Amino acid sequence: MSMLRAQILILAAASIATLVSSAAQAGGFFIRGYSTTGLGAAFAGIASGNYLSSVFANPAGIFVVNGLEAEVDGTLVVTNSNISGTATFEPAPPLDTVFGSSVPLSFLDSNGGEFVDPAFLPALYAGLPLSDRLKIGFGLDGHFGLVTEPDNQNWAGQFEARNSRLLTYNFNPVAAYQLLPTLILGAGVQVQFADTVLKSAFPNLPAFQGLFLGVPPNQVLKNAFGGSNPNLVIDGDNLGVGYTLGVVWNPFSGTDIGLGFRSSVQHTLEGDISVAGHRSLGSARTSADLETPEIVTSSISQRVSERLTLLGTVQWTDWSELNQIVIQARSSNPNLGAVAGSPVAVLPLDWHDEWFFSGGVEYDLNNRTTFRSGVAFEESPVQNAVERSARLPDTNRVWVSFGATRSLGAFTTLNLAYSHVFFEDGSIDRTTQFSVGDIRLLGKAEQDVDVFGLSVNVKFGRPVQPLK
Image (cartoon, rainbow, N blue to C red; front, side, top):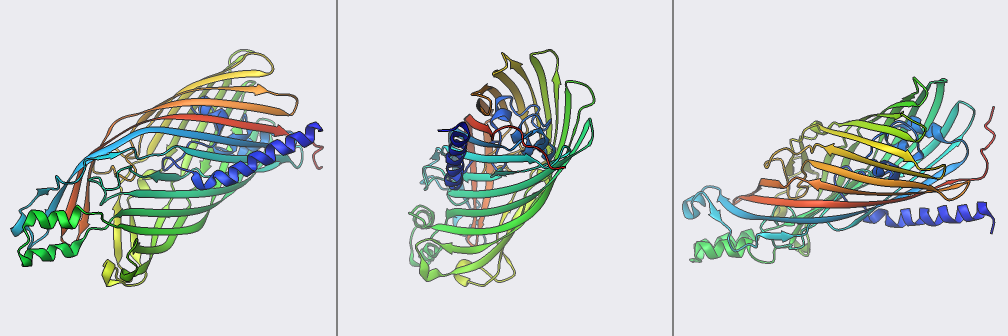
């Protein structure tokens, strides 16, 4: 078997794995699973354009290719997590005259258990020179995502969250042009598909009619909230478009400075609201506006000796624009309280802009092996218990990362990486509204994460002769 044929088979197999695994993507709202080399240094230097997967942070990074080149990245995220809490019923008038202002729902299990399953996050990159100064390529990834599901579906927080899923698939064609010997400009287009499903428990509200039949108030509450409540399901999907911009500047020999910008992508998620297993209740059409945040990434790569390079990154994410998600009814259904043109549910967020800081090093052991390491601090957009939802109990975190690159020959390179992510514990104080009153959840989420990365980079033969 020829070397070129072997390279094609390796890349094809990895590409198939990428496509098959896409449906299993999971993780935080912003997924840092797009670059194995980046992961190994805690993403320090990611936008300075020194390897193919830096295209995600900076489209000018595609200029690194000298011939036809492709890379497949796979990241495995393994989370150790637990969520727990207690629920209290705060009745609306006139039920408050019967129950009082607040009643603990002590019959609900406080332990939700593990709420994040292991997830595989794939990415694919490729590039090609068109001339001495112009190079093109693309990235394919799913960098925004959310999958959380407590093991105990009947825990105290079930009326806010049983299952939350947001998957995105982003195709990002890019081009880079060398304007000056020391200056490269890049730009690209984002074509992003988003698919979401939100599930929460739907209480047995007719149980409150038992008050008129002499059923004790405590039993009424247990009948309403303590049974095997079905899922209220809201889903939707949409295709949106955005753009990316970037620059790489080499002011001195051994110094690479990169600045990348990813625009927001606006989605109008169109779907339905229904109660699972209760077709007699019908459904209603819904829509919700979701705007992914803008991301600005600045990085530096500074070679300080023949073998040692220092790396740094500062990244800003514009989460403050995400104040709330309003789910509008597009058709009416009195069984679900849906009135066309009016909100059927509101998910309050009030998030803050996020900052990410990382520093790292690379050390060339020889001309075939490079080691790297890095540390990062990531500020969560969620900064207090009222903002923190059981759907995404996010907190500040610290990354500690290690990685290596090994050349397997003239055309193939293998990258490995590992990170441990230390999360702060997060308290939860959320209120879910129903016609009979509110349910307030006071909870706590704990988690830490192990992240494993693997990528294969293949150069297809000798550098191609660029078009003149």
